[in-house]
Image (cartoon, rainbow, N blue to C red; front, side, top):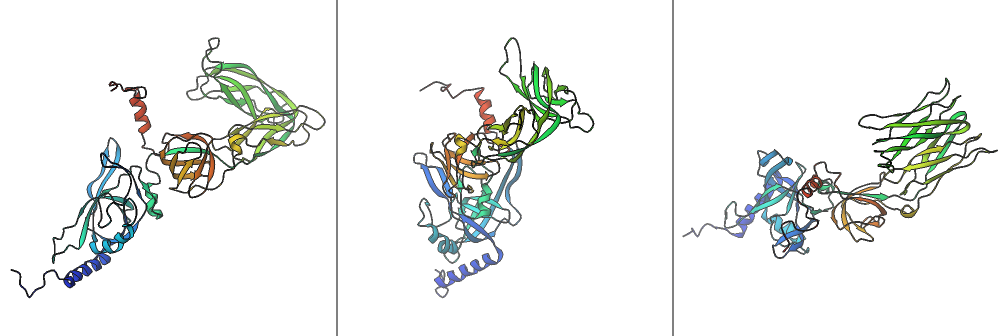
Length: 467
């Protein structure tokens, strides 16, 4: 029998031990963040969690029991690349959890167990700037001192992200998943802004037209263009070639053909029409292209972009005012980049008879480009497609290139629909959706799928027989 003169497990003794433990954790521990897991969607048959979220983060003191460093197998080099397999053991106060965290989460929906730490919850460890997942909660060590347990021992492994939603509002935690997971890239149409440009002229001896005499064959990339040099004091012309494959296999021809040479700079000071040469480099196998040039007085020398505009979905039309007193009006073509900005204006004819600088007019965006884009998407917010109803989480929005990187995509976005930000209120029209992950350097899912389809194609039917 126990000695009746000694209290074994009185409330006061237990409270004293608990207070001493709490004080030591505050003195010798580190401040971690505890992230309870919300089970949003479950498979009721297999009892598998299909979708989970982490939307709360609570600071809590913890003692690092792995005093010699991370446990586990450390950093491994495998056929899947470099993998970190770190373990971490933490000790937290039972009383602190029950009196601080439990009251804050017990009324939150989809949190199955609030009375104690549970396996599957996350720990943010600030010393290593890493997220760990709780794999086992030990609640009986030390074993019933004074008939009570006072701490939880959390055995954790480095968290492996699987499209969980991490939106705690703590930037240093949420940023842990900024560039992980499978990421799709949406190219958006920016705000509709009309591009502007200005021109300069050459009084005499500028190249005003390129005449293609032989389109050549087998050009897999555009050849570079070389003009003979202008006389001393003049400026040598610059051009850019355009190729087409429309004539492939027509009368035995193969590969691309040169269909036009656009004038980037008409040069100045030529007294005779310069010759033109088509140069190929690298693996370009093209040959045979030939052209002649014409020169004139009062040509447009060069067009410079003033405002590149935005919101263009196709190359806009460019017009030039005619020369005063008669002559030939210049014509040109504009080019845009993937973000819908005008990047260059080339001349198909540099005109004749200009004595003053002409006015250059670039047409305004039309179609989707006329959509007024507003706002800036926020990291981790949900975006919704107006037509398809597809949802996704924002990873990163780059305004300058009008690209939106998203993950956890549910559905397929439709080109032309508006993409709404549920928190930011941002709205832009979608130009192109790229389902391939071009952001993560080690995302080989697409490559694996393509190679697998070349062996077994599941897209038409089950190759092993239909049930």
